[in-house]
Image (cartoon, rainbow, N blue to C red; front, side, top):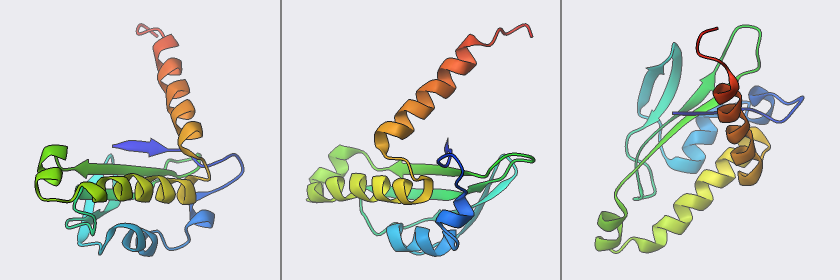
Length: 130
């Protein structure tokens, strides 16, 4: 599960007022919910794109902080997708993921990677014995 921050000064609720509807528009019907670290997230059990096996997405709310977008894209093995003749679906899957994350966070793929790198570097700089 990855959590994505919004752009400075922006909030997930402002960018996607109806998160469930947005998830359905991009990936298919929401079939239920799942809990992750105390957050109730939407589940798409049978995504429209055959590359995806299952998608879990929703708002991760933290006291005193802005909401983050929590997402877990579970993908099928590439060999299986290609064997079924769905190789073209792979490019569409990448495009859908990037479009959804850009709309939700206001950050493109490069900005999201840089942000995740900084988060990892910050954790690496923290001493374990504090």
